[in-house]
Structures are given as C-alpha cells and as structure tokens.
Image (cartoon, rainbow, N blue to C red; front, side, top):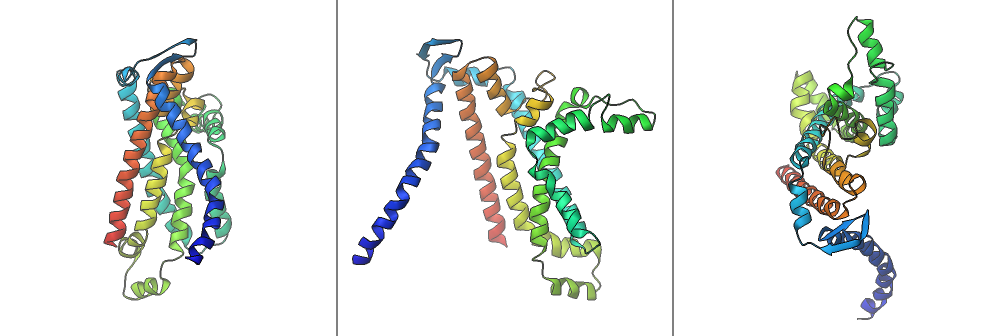
Length: 291
C-alpha cells in the first residue's frame, strides 16, 4: 500500500501533459464537429444556423468529390508502389561496398529533409518548366517538343514530385534494415551456389517484410494529407484533375468560404484516414504474426 501511495505523486506529475495533449486533440475535433452541423460562411459570419447533416450531403454531392476520392487513391497507391519498389532496388544496390558509399547514401536520403513547398517549386520551375526547365532542354537536345508536364500530365507530375520526396524515406528504412541481414547466412547461400535473384527472393525480400509494412503504413497516412505540392504546382487543376480530399477541403474553406462544408469534408478525410490506418495496421499485424 505504501509503495502505491508513493507512486501516485509521480503519476500526477504527468497528468498536466496528458490533459494538454488531450485538449490539443479534442478541442479542434469538437469544433470541427460543431461547424459541420452549422451553416457558417465567412462572408456572412452573423448568419449561422444549425443544418444537421446537410453539409455532409452538400460535400458528397459536390461535383469534384468523387474525382477527389479517385485522385487520392491513385496518388497514394502510385507513390507507395514507386517508393517501395524503387526504395528496395536502390537500397540493395547501395548496400554493396563501393568507393564513396557514405556520400551516395547521404545524397539519396537528403531530399527527404527538403520542405514539400520547396520541392514542388524546384520541380515546377527548374525541372518540369516547358520553356526553361531541365527536361525541356533534354527534349530539345533530341529534337523533340518539350512537354508541358503540369498541363498535359498533371496527376502524373504530382505523383513524380511526391515520390521524389518520399523515396529517400523508404531508402533510409530499407538500408537500415539491410544492415541487420545475417551475413553468415548470406555467405553460406553464396557458397551453395545461390546468386543474384535467388538471394534477393529467398533472403533479402523476406528480411525486408517488416520494413516494407512499416513504410507502407507511415507513407499512406501522410500521403492522404498531400496538399502543398498540389497547391504550388497545379492548384488542383486543370479543372479538378489533381484535386484530392485535402485540396477539396481547402477549396471549400478558403475559396468558397463555406466553413460548414469544409468541416464536413475534414471529418470525411479523418474517417478515410482511420479506415486506411486500421486496414494497414491489421495487414502489418498479420504479416508480423506469420513471420
């Protein structure tokens, strides 16, 4: 009993932080729930009224809603495939010892520390610009007509930009995981005649099962919130070709000034993110259990 009494003051010391963290999450969520049931337009702040679930109906019936859902799925899925497949391939290559290995690894990881807005500006103005960009110069070098990437292939261009940002994260996780691969087992496999693809299929890939699951889960949660790259490069266009759920919420809140519909959209985004998280957590748990 005395030991329990002594521990209580220590537990109480952590309560202010726990309460602050709880308020940090609950207050914005409660305000979003409140505004999702209100007609509240920033142009007419004095004309708020309770409308129940009408904001959700308006958001679901918005012309760009299903397009934004499809764009979100395509964006998240494409970036996951590119970063996982590319990350594994590059990690296996740089895992071999060669001169300048440390510098190469550092250069491969460095794009992850660049802010999304800066990355988008670099790709838009320095690489994909149809007049003065590097890719336009390459196209002209071979006598071809430069491509206006963000006008002709907008969603693909955004996928390339976001993949470039997140590929270093996958490389970092996979390179770190490869450091723990049993070298004695690897040498034994080579002595038994195993080469290249066989080693990758039966040793490397199974060893990366857990890191792959972690990369997929972490990236998927963050990719559902991609906004800066779209805002800087395409503004959701042309039309709604690159509009995803976060950008659609931004459109409702700060372009149409409809806080109620934007709050409803924010809750829809939260629900989708949680569904994705639960699915991925179960998938990861299953993979870990099987191993």
